[in-house]
Length: 78
Image 1 (spheres, one colour):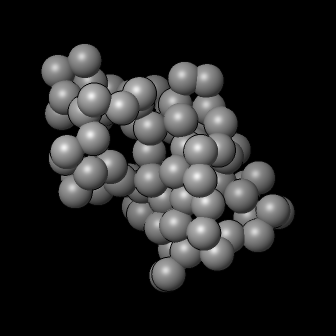
Image 2 (tube, helix red, strand yellow):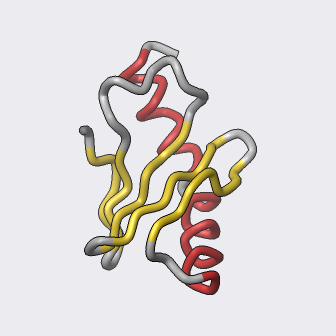
Image 3 (tube, rainbow, N blue to C red):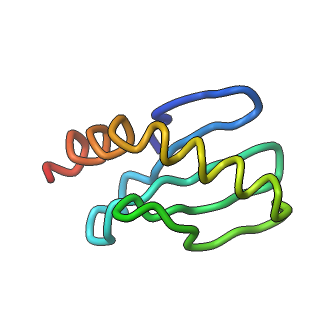
């Protein structure tokens, strides 16, 4: 599970066996997890994150979307 970015308390990553799904990024903080689609950026799933924090994370995903997409494409050959 390649980690693409660590930013503050967050780890942004994807799993190596997810190449058949549309491009996305997982976000973890402690035991909280979320998954965001990258094109366009939107929340797919969330566990233990509150609404305000999810909005902050979505802003971070949007800010770093190009980095995440390039990491995805580099790993899965997209």
